[in-house]
Each structure stands twice: as C-alpha cells, then as structure tokens.
Image 1 (spheres, rainbow, N blue to C red):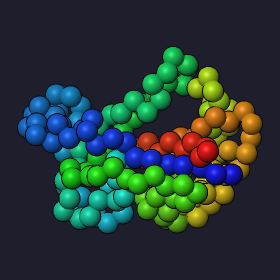
Image 2: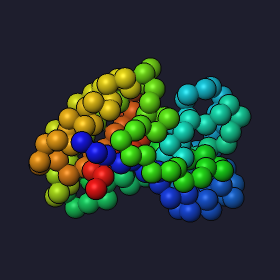
Image 3: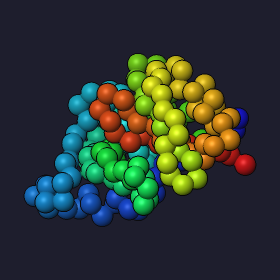
Length: 158
C-alpha cells in the first residue's frame, strides 16, 4: 500500500517565535531549548531538534472536525524548521526510530476512528500499510504513545 506523510506548514508558527515568553505563556505555549538528542520531534520538519535548538511546544488542532473524535494536542516546532519533503512509502526521520513507541489511529471518511494500535518504531511502517489496506480507512494519525504528542497524518498516495 502506497502512503504519504508531510509536515505542517511552517508559516502558521513562524510569527510565534517573535513573542516574549510572557506572551507565549498567555497563549499556553512554552519555549524550550533542546537538551537531549532524539527528544524534541518537530512537526514541521519531521526531524528531531539538535541539542541547543529553540522550539515551541504548543497545542495544535490536528483533527479539526465535528465528529466526536475532534482532537488537539501538543506538538513541537523548531524555530528555523523548513517544510519537510513529502515522504512516500518511507518514514520521516522522527518516525523511523526503533526506540520510540507510537499510537496509530485509523479514521474513516467521516472522521470516526475505526481502528487503533500501538507499535514500536521498527513495526510502524508495517502497521501503517496494514491499516491502509482496509477499505473503511481513509487516513491515519500517528502519536508518540508515551507523551501523546501528535506526530503525523498518513494518507494514501495516488
């Protein structure tokens, strides 16, 4: 099954980096400096931040729908993140990590969850392909299972 994963558009976050910490906090946003490798996955670049990089942790509506499954949750965005290339039939760097545990949620065309499973990074691609073989599945959402951050939307690639 052919699938694709893309990052979020950086333009929707760029203006936030010019705000003071107090202005960010008023919007429920935290500024961070990455202090460990493979610990700060950026939702725009689909890469982990390098130690010393500035990021924002903010709440993002990743399932903006009227279904009962509408959802928003935490994501990291790197200050100088560029839009990730389209990943087709391959995982972006932050998802291709065997040490990470992922929660995958399968949704139908009415944004209702029809299946869900947890997988390690080494099993993730197989799980994505398996879900997308099901005719009732329209798209997938991947989350970092331990912290709950939204990681990526996965769609079929035409």
